[in-house]
Length: 144
Ligand SMILES: C[C@@]1(CC(=O)O)C2=NC(=C\c3[nH]c(c(CCC(=O)O)c3CC(=O)O)Cc3[nH]c(c(CC(=O)O)c3CCC(=O)O)/C=C3\N/C(=C\2)[C@@H](CCC(=O)O)[C@]3(C)CC(=O)O)/[C@H]1CCC(=O)O
Ligand SMILES: NC(=O)c1ccc[n+]([C@@H]2O[C@H](COP(=O)([O-])OP(=O)(O)OC[C@H]3O[C@@H](n4cnc5c(N)ncnc54)[C@H](O)[C@@H]3O)[C@@H](O)[C@H]2O)c1
Image (cartoon, rainbow, N blue to C red; front, top):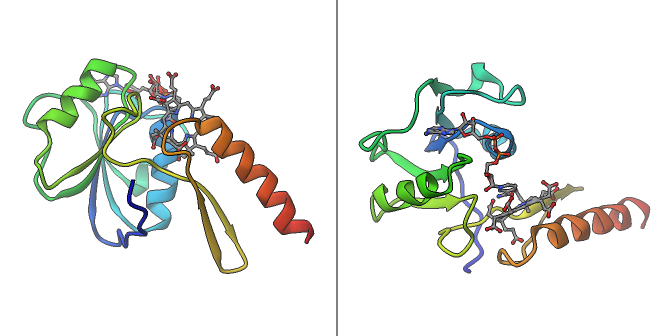
């Protein structure tokens, strides 16, 4: 996996599914000032509906719009998440939260500390190890 940091300010991001995992992705995207559209019948209480465009419906073929730079397939329907990856344009990069084997990018576990941004990745092998390492590193940074 090729690590980069991306400026998403004013870039369109599509999220399909509006649950717990989507809420985690939305937090980071809002802070980067991305333009967020969510297609989902429900919206988790952790998502600030005033900061996203919520299209309240089930995903259907044709819903993917070409101006979306990134797509998060975040539903709890694994085959649907895989269908979304297949229906995206070749120019769009898709995160499939339920299948790391086919996912085209991953989120990293993030630390922001004193002007530093530290991303921790296991390249999908163990998100839990990434989280544990973040907590330990965060404690070390705070106490050094
Ligand atoms: C780092 C972090 C960032 C973020 O999401 O923003 C992140 N996962 C986090 C947490 C977390 N994820 C999971 C648990 C429960 C674990 C448990 O209990 O066992 C917890 C812990 C929790 O939720 O507390 C389960 C899980 N995760 C994935 C799958 C699907 C699969 O493996 O195929 C399943 C199984 C689903 C199932 O089958 O149920 C997949 C992915 N998760 C990734 C990132 C990407 C790889 C990152 C890497 O390089 O390792 C990747 C590939 C795609 C993606 O999502 O980008 C964030 C840490 C935030 C923090 O630092 O606190
Ligand atoms: N990447 C990760 O870190 C991670 C961690 C845990 C779980 N997961 C995976 O992520 C999936 C989602 O987890 P969650 O906790 O967010 O689930 P959730 O139940 O909180 O949310 C699922 C969302 O998908 C929506 N949805 C369902 N069918 C839909 C459809 N046809 N069209 C549009 N939206 C639809 C629901 O309305 C809901 O908003 C899990 O099933 C699991 O496979 C990933």
